[in-house]
Image 1 (cartoon, one colour):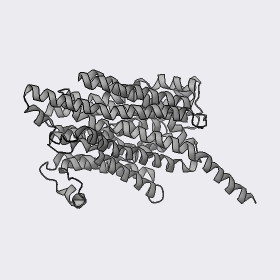
Image 2 (cartoon, rainbow, N blue to C red):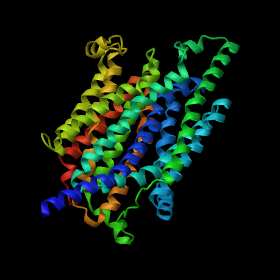
Image 3 (cartoon, rainbow, N blue to C red):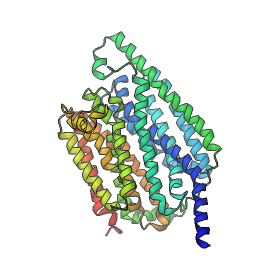
Image 4 (cartoon, helix red, strand yellow):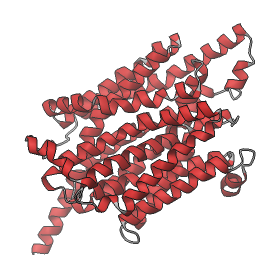
Length: 441
């Protein structure tokens, strides 16, 4: 009798969590689509606004620095409004920011583009802060890892789709649009082509704004339950977190991870364009496909066949090997990708570009493995530890700029990938030792 009651309760809990999980899954798709659209946007803005590689990477800086700058204001908004209304506000901020791309494109103003990107990042900050607790708390704690992996797959699947949609809308009939081709055009002809591409650039963001405003109403009136975040308000909670090296070092590991994740996803188009790759606008999709494969492997093998620390160790080692492959392989050869998927009709890419995309597979499991390792044993400080880990997203703002500066100073974009090597090495340290530390002595 008790077994039947237990099974009935489990079934009811599963049904009650289905709608909230569906809504949150939709939001994670939006996260991925908006975030990984930047990888396609960077090479286009480089051409439209006549930027060098370092300047173009302020796209990632403006977007990801919003997570750091706006984290506290957005958390205060969330505390006042509650989670559901907070999500609606975040979507509205993103919708307005998407519309700012219209004057940015028409004026060809890079600062206005950056303002729009900062706004998108600010809206995503409140969405991330509000939606991530749902993934953990909307169902049984023992299945939280599975839910995180599923959301990761949804997020990165959107990252596969975004560059393809962007390229189809912007580059249809303009296959010869690249910096070399534009540089060869005369003044009036050059201005005409840039104006046409700028007008086409508006369309993806108009569609995005319309969808975001529709989602505002959907989320606002959806039956999402409010959840208790368990945050501590006392001063001990705010200061005591620094006693735990595993979470401090975990935040630094995530700082390094988000930096290399953004490099692999958002600079691959910039690098491909510098090599004359015809489909450079869709190269972010290659990285995202490898990341989806990585998440699927995580669902299949963790913890059944491999532990979280072992998966993190393997990720760091594989990332180091990918960096070496990107830097030292020949840009004149496409043999590796041709052998792997040439039969499918998918365009092969130069070997260094392949290794950049493969970084997505290498580090896909860093985020889902660092979180549980960093939060282990925090007890009442778990909420503060989670907030600190979220701050690690700032790595996506800082590390790509270092990538751009190295490439600009050295005269070769590919040299920028050296910055990923110390990032992977720190992740390796955390996997082998850092997550085990329980005191600074």
